[in-house]
Image (cartoon, rainbow, N blue to C red):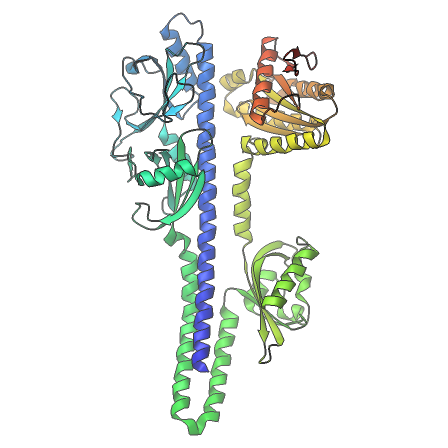
Length: 619
């Protein structure tokens, strides 16, 4: 019987430790995936901002007298873009003809191997392998270089098409990887893990580990194909880092790169190893003592009764030691649910003393966050299987809500009848708060606290579905601030941030609860006007938005004022338009409002089933 008991204890202990290990690895994998998603979103938005900024710079250069004027505009664009090294124009032979860095002119940058591979004129942004050097002048393609050692700098070349030039010229952008590496390093410490950015062919573009080489393909073609087939994933592998890591990756939704994050497995399991040592430090002495007693009982059968009493006494002493000193809270109840005893960890976590909880039913701890159906399902599983494990929200004595990882086990007698219930739980509130913060960072703009582009896309899909179901109109409002750049140039980014935050509050106040306001990027906002009976119903809201944007605000005694140009598209009209098409249509309408004199709105035109242009409403 003692042998069976030892085997059972070792089995249960091993299984519990395995579950705790699996839980620690799963949580770390989730953190790694969230970081990969956050880093990918930041880099994608930066590339999109680069594309928008350079597109504006190119559009501003139309009609310039010479390439020197173009170079001057490029240099002006670089002042507000720390993630850029240089802006250049290259001809059809990949030779630089104009650049923000005069030393680049005449340099030939071969772009045939840039991703994505194309045949014919370039229409999308393409990304090349990293270069050694701070710019293309005196630089070279990095193959196996160690970034960050002995002052070695790198850049990432990106090409983009130039609109309305017949394909003769293209834009060449030198990205500054140090900017993105610093951002990633602030969130992922070197001793905890590392992050890196790869092209879709597996070429390493940048990494937070200064000892790793850039310009190489560290994971082989098999993994590169996996990046191209799956948008995100995770794996547990050494990954060429010298030690096992929990790796997660996420492919950019718009550009040919993938962000890979590695959390070192030994760091992820550090707390688990501490718990293992604590459990085994108590368990093995108990098992040694019990084994010694078994041998003594076998060799001294004539004193069996005396030895049995001694064994029971030692077991009670050790069980009491574990019960008192274990870090997890323990709650023991009768079969009817009345509390028999709790340990010191329970008192510390909940704030209730033993005397206060004795004889009570644990339901007095309920926080109200879970409904009746949740507890019914929990008890059904517990009665059927004799075991339940999951997350639950309870309330401390001081009223604070805390999250617990709870395990409840039924204790049966020899006839299978339930005698007691034993509940063990940990306080996981801090981990839940951290997870929620990561989720919010990924979906909300950190400056204005408005939904970002990711959450806007989700809200827009829901609003379009709702409009079709209820046969109502949805207005997509694209808002661009007039004169915002002058505020940044004259008063600095602190004043610009104040304007964005204040205008975000004002515009949100003039919208209805059913409407959505999101920051699209820079000084651009997008509003979704839901539940419209007709397009004309949007006009009062648009006028309130114009008025809210044009009111001056005070900054250190200075009166700052901007206006807004607004473009609106509507859904549904004839034709199955996507959310992106609606945004583009609203964007075009906004530019018409700017051309018409700014500080006004323009409602988009659509087409009827005969192909004729039909005005929705005069602007």
